[in-house]
Structures are given as C-alpha cells and as structure tokens.
Image (tube, rainbow over the protein chains, first blue to last red):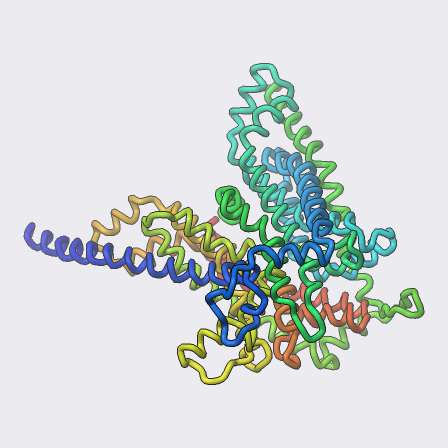
Length: 294
Length: 302
C-alpha cells in the first residue's frame, strides 16, 4: 500500500519539477515577447524623433542613422509652434483638475468610507454610473453649457470637463483607501484629545498618503492624456491648446510631418513614461483598488 | 449606552456633512449635462445664421435612427460591437496568459510590469500616431519588416484596405487595452494563498486542474469587473479610431462613436447627435446587463 502511494507521488513530483523548469522558461519567453511588443512601438517613436529627416523617409528604412541628429527635431518643434505654451497649458489643466478632484474627493471619499448613513453604497454606485456616459456623448451638452457661459475654448472649460469625469474615480479610489484604514487609529487619536477634524487631519491624511498619491497620479495622467474634450471644447487658439491637441497640428492635408510628430509625441508622453517608471507602485495600487474592492 | 449611541449618531452626521457639499456639487453637476442631453435629443437643432434654430420634434430623431432611415446607424452599431468584442476578448486572453507567466516567481517582475504598463499609460493621441507611423504603407516598419523577410511581396496599405483597416484598429486597441488586464489579473493571482496551490500539488492535481479549480474561482470577480469595464470603454472609445482611420476607408471602420461625432460636428445635427448618444448609452446598458447575467452566479455569492 505504501509503495503504491509513493510511486504515484514520485511520478507527480517528477512532472511537477519538469513543468516547473520548462514552465519558467516558457513564462520568460511569453513575458519577453509581450514586453517587446509593448515597448518597440514606443521606442521606435523615440528613435524616429532623434533621427535625421532623410533617414525617416528613406525607403527601404535605414535602420543605421546616416548621422546623429540629436535633438534638432525638438528644437524645431518648440520653435515652430508655441510648444512651451502648450506644455504650460497641459500642466495648468492637469494640475488644477487634480487639485480640485483631491479637494472635493477626499472628504467625500472619507465620508463614504466611514459611512454611518444608509445609502452610501448607492451614492457611490450612482456616481460611478455617471462615468458610464461616454465623454464624447456629453459633448453637445458641454458645448452648449460652455457656450452659454462664454467660456468655450478656454482652459477653465477643460478643467471643468475633466474634473467632471475624474471626480467619481477619485472618490471611488479614495474611499477604497480610506476603508482600509481601521477606525482604531481615529479612535486612538480622539482618546488622545483630538477633535474630530483633528483626528481626520492628522491620522487619516498621513496614513492615506499613498492612496491620495495614487488618486492624484491617476487623475493627473488621465487629464494630461485626455484628447476628446481638449480638441472639441478648446484648441482654436494657442492659449487654449493643450499638448494632446498640439501634436495634431503637424498633420497637413497630404503630408504628415512624422519627424515633428514623433518629437511632439515624446514630449506629450513624458509624464506617462515618468509616472510608470518611477511611480509604478501608485498606479498599480490605484488600478487594483478600483477592481478588487467591490 | 446612550453616550455610545449619541456618539455614533454624531459620527454619522459628521460623515454626512463632510460628504454633503461634495455630493451636492457632484450630483447637480453630473445630472445636468445628462438631462440636457436627453432634452435636446427631442429637438432638431441646427445652426442657422449665427444662432441655433431649435424645433421640437419629439421622437423623430430616434425614429430616424432605429428605423433604418439612417444608413449608418445599424452598421456602425454592429461595427462597434465587433470592435468591442474582439478587443476585449483578445486582450483578456493575452492578458491572462501574460499574467499567469508573470505569476511564476520570475525576477525583475517590477521592471516587466512597468514595461507592460506603458501602452496603457501613453496618451491615446500619441499611441494613435505611433501606430499610424508603424502601419504606414511606405515608410512604416511593419511593411519593411514583412518585405525584408519576404513574407509579403507588396506593401500592404494597412489603414486603407478592407479588411486590414478594421484589423489594424482593433489590434492597436488590443495593444492599449492588454496592460490593464495584465495588471489586475496578476494582482488577483497574487492574492491566492500559496497553501492552496501546494495542497493541490500534494493531492496530485496537475497544472490544468490547479488552474481550473483554484485559480479560476479566485479570478472570477476580477474578471467580471475587467470584462465589464473594458467592454464599456472599448465600445465608446473614440480617439483611436478617429485618428487612425477617421472611419475609413469608405465606411469600413465607421464606428458608432464616430458616427455620433460626425453627426454633431460635421453635419451639425446636434439634436440627432444627442439621440445617438442616448442610443449609445442604451447599448452600454445592454452590455452591462449582458455581463451581469453571465456572471450572476459569481455575484450571487457576494
């Protein structure tokens, strides 16, 4: 009896070990393959932005550059168009939207997380369902509203529109993070003599720091990358043009200036690269908080 | 006893007050555009000599769309569904495979996670142009690669030929959508306690059994969330299709979103554009119900 059990286990252990060794190799291959597929397009854009123009349009493609151009395309881009202004506009819109979402969203998220009142979950669901509406679908409404308010084609219009769409997400994320903090901390602070606001301020904000950072990064990134509103509700004049729109200026009727577009693309994509490479932890915690915490 | 109750009531009130201003702002602000949208969908709104000419026409807009008088409505709806299902299913499957691979204790997980996250994090405008550049029929590296290795003899006009246009757009969408799948699925897999897997191995379960009976049940809630959210986003995604092909060639990649955009901004039929938006919302509700039904057994457990 014992021998039989041993043989069975032996066989499985053998296969398990084999599977483990080849399994890991296969895993590496899969990951490498996908990493290449993910990275090559972006790398190619970056390479195109620093190659001389003759190389870019040469057919067949010259992979080895004839001479190193360096950053000349970038200089031309910033000279040709008011790209510093566009960058500034992007910063303003993304920054203020993030601030607004945090200012409005943090108390809301906290309140919903510690909710004693019924219907808190319904409120949350209701808010999220607003997000179901495609931004593009609400364009006519926003267009009309901003037209009546006279702020069409200005940065505040973009700020309002982006805050509208990012606030539910911010609240949802922040609520998730606040829920994770046990109430003991607040109670301890209250026992030590803090007022309710004091407890909120000192204990919660410090502990939820990573959560707030995650929400901030998500909102900033979404707003910076946002295109639909940027090009419809704004963008007719340089003062209201954001980077995401600026890149489309290099499309001519018959000709696309790929050299400029690739440089502009790198500039526009910098925050994404920056946040992913250095703040990956926050982005991922933000994404997970959205999904695992139902 | 009473003091504790009092304190609890005060705490609830405090929370309520804290949340109240934000909620008021949010509800007011959120509902207004939607209400406006519904209202104007019952009107015919056309720009006329500098202002907007409004005319109440009831359900005429909807009749126009749903009855087939609009030659683009149903075809573009169908294309949007095709686009959505292909992209979501493919990205989910690929994401699952990569997540399973990443779950096998390999080194440099953080590094690989960062790289795989990039396509999702890039601005859509930039990604659209990246792909348009790669798929360029003359100077794009895809054709160059295929030609050099003699896989094809003539350059393929990826974004200008049927059926390659739709395939190219969907593939770009998959490229952008898969990272989210990977990240969420990987995170879910990593919450599965080691002991379950080890116990299963000791009990003699092979890889497939371990996958099906342990991993899948764990992943179902996340899968529901992912599939639902991704379907909704894929259905309404605008920038990618618009920038890659603009709906062309002809109407090959003419999606419902693009039809809505054209109706409102090219043909200036704002009322009808609003009706299209509401129709799109109805389709999204349909999609939500669809996924909720499929996953109802999972949801019931919660």
